[in-house]
Each structure stands twice: as C-alpha cells, then as structure tokens.
Image 1: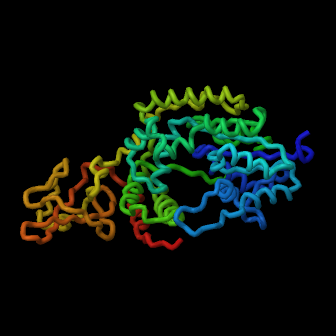
Image 2: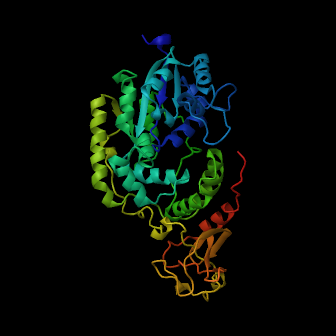
Length: 432
C-alpha cells in the first residue's frame, strides 16, 4: 500500500514550452471541479497556499535576477505543508522549472511529501516547434541573437556549455530529465505525455494529461484557459532590437513588466505573420528526435500519446524565423530609418545616399552611434531611432545619413504600429 493510505502526489515537471501555461490555467480555473474528483491543486489566492512556481524556484535556490525580491524563500516547505493539510487523496503540483532539478534536488522535492506516493508526469513536444518558440522566448527574456546565430549555437555540441545553447538544452533535453527522475521514482510511476501535432483536435492535450494524472476532463471549463502564444515575424524582431537598445539595463522583474507584459502583450494583438520551422533544419533535428525517442523507450516510462508526435515537421504556411532581420543590424550601431528626408541633414535626405553595404556617400563618413530619444515612423513601420555623428578634419561634429530601409525590412501592419507606439512610451526606469 502506498504511504498515507493511498494518498498520491503527481508532479508535473514540464518541459518548458509544452502547453504548461494552458494546462496550469485550466487546473487553477477548475480547482472546485477537480476537488470534487479528489484532486487538490495549489492556488496562490487561497489563504496559506503558495505558488507552485515560487516553490519550485525556492527548491532550486533561485532568486529573481538583480532584484531584492525574496518571495521565494521558504515556499517549497510551505507547499509541502499545505499538501499535507489537504484531505484529498491526490495532490497535483505543476511547475515546469521542476524539470531543471538535479537528482539531489529531486530527492529533496519528494521528501517533503513523505505521506504521499509520487508519480512524475513529463510533457514533451517535437524539437522543431520547440526550437522556434525557444528562440522567441529567449528574445522575450532579453536575448539579442538573431535566428541564424541562435540555431547555430544550439546545434553545435561544442557550444552547449554556454548560452544560448546551454539554456535551450537545459530546458528541453528530455533524455536528461528522464535520467534525473528515473533515478528518483520507480519506472511505473514515470509518465511521458506527448503534445499532439499542429492541427490536432482541441482538447487533445488536456485529455492526454488527464489520463496521465487520473481524472475526468469532461466537467472542466476551458473557456477561460490562458495560453502562451508566440510572437510573429515582425514582433520578434521589434523585441530583439529593443533588447539591443536596452543593453541589459533591466533586472528580471523589470524585463518581465516592461518587455514581456507591456511590449509583447501589445505585439501579440497585432496581425503578424507566424514563424515556423524551416526545412533546412530538419536533418539535425530529426537526429535529435531519434535520440529522444530512444531515451524514452529505454527509460521504461509509460507513454500517453504517440512517440511519432516527437518527429519534427516543417511548416510550409509559416514564415522563416528571423526573416525580418537585417543582417547589418547584428553589428552595432545597427541602422535605423527616419520618417522624412529632413531627418538626414547634411546629406540632402537622399534615401539612396547609403548603399546596401552600409557605406556612406561622399562627405558623410562613419562615426560613433548615439542612441536618440523616441521612436520614429517610416513607410514600413516603427523602429527606435539612432543618430550618428562624424568628426570633420576641423574637429567639428556633423550629422550623417540614416539609411532608408523601406526595401529591406518586413512591413509592419497598422495594428502593430499602434501597439508598438504605445509600448515604446514605457520608461526603462521602472522600479522593481
């Protein structure tokens, strides 16, 4: 008999970007319906119940980056105490950062639930979709690498010890996660849930997750479920350039508020082209998928879904990630464009005065870039503006041309333009 007279603990440990936001929002919104089935879900707005996310951070010893936020301290022990007080036979804890635990931390996690028999559920997704969403997520978190640089570093095994390759594989290396939890719980209590491929019927993921946990999903209301949708082609590029402009001046909480909530929240409402996996990435991703499937089979974990769902597939209806990126924008100072010829005094405002290779016309030599205040419009959208100065032979400064980029940047639609304009007013001096 299991400890505690049949009382169970179900740890949903992620992985990241595998529908966790959607599942967690469904669980929180339906805690009463789940309680009727004997499933306890920790909801922070209930007195004395901590956030599972904060508790997982505390278990790992993590704190908010460059912030005095100490809300995580003691949260894992508080979560264990709240679960012990619950009379319900099943305690369901979902936090994707639990996939980052070491073996020692995983053992400590289960030790706090000594009165319950543990089951570990791992949700996973094909690496093709994960790669695209992983790049977008890194950009939302402040990264400045373009798509090509990001993929090259993730793919290079020699570069996996440093970011962004390190961050990607820490979050998405299913074989490593199964190795940790396979040494912590018996094989028959390790469950792998595969995400259905794009275009699958709505509710498929929830049905698979419910089967793994052991509850009936039919009474649950999913109308208010919250997802974590990705950005589009232009939106991702806007955020990436904003990160360049900010230069890591925001701490973790400020980045979340200013960029993830305000800017990204506005860009998601825009009509933007969706990004999808390019076909040229299939060969190496398919090899990684074979390694992943072999590891799942070797672990002996129960599989809910189909392992064929982990095979990466190209998306012919989507745009290539990073297709709005101007290659010259990777070398600071990155070019900007202006709303009128008057913005380029000294060069006659000629849009053709700067060549595609970035060379300047006669009399307008290169100089150091200085960030200018505000954002300016162009025929194709909005971008942070920069001004450059050159030093003449007499030691005087004179403004140079800013290249017109109407033929080099992906167009930005009017709804996105309005959103970005509003988001750009947020000051980077946001208090933590």
